[in-house]
Image 1 (cartoon, rainbow, N blue to C red):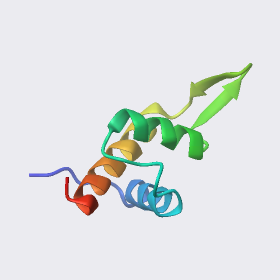
Image 2: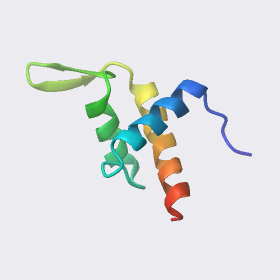
Image 3: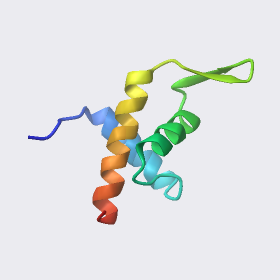
Length: 74
């Protein structure tokens, strides 16, 4: 049985991958970093990035990882 994710998580992940196809790959850590850079889920204070919505960012990055692996066949 697989996990069922909310529509907004899928929509955001797919939109990010379509707009920035070279930035995402099969690595979760890289995808999480890119999600935080490209969305407003983190806030930069005094030059440091503070994640406001950590769980949401992890879910989007996780779905993006699975989506990229499925599309590229790895």
